Length: 101
Image (cartoon, rainbow, N blue to C red; front, side, top):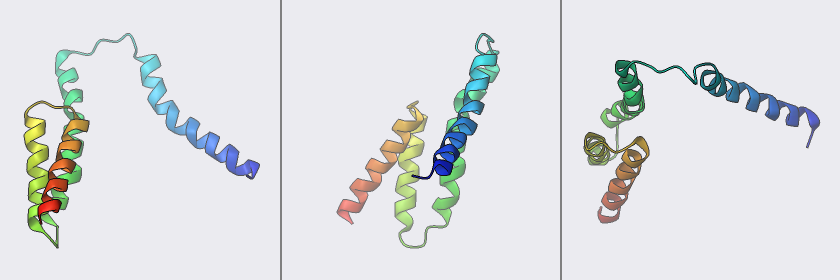
């Protein structure tokens, strides 16, 4: 492999790692108020909703595919599961739906 490519990969790794490391190091001992902790705890669900909801309305082939996936995600999130469980529940529901259709 060309050494330029290796250095480029190392550089990209450093550039993507630094924004994750710096807040952890600089703000490691800072305790956020409970309001901000609640806001930050719900950010993954907001991002997940922003990614999924527009696609539900623009499905061309099978409208129920989007509705079932969205419903599974909403119900699982409403029950308090973490984001990975929400995604896996939607995938499982759509897998079951595609088996029977």
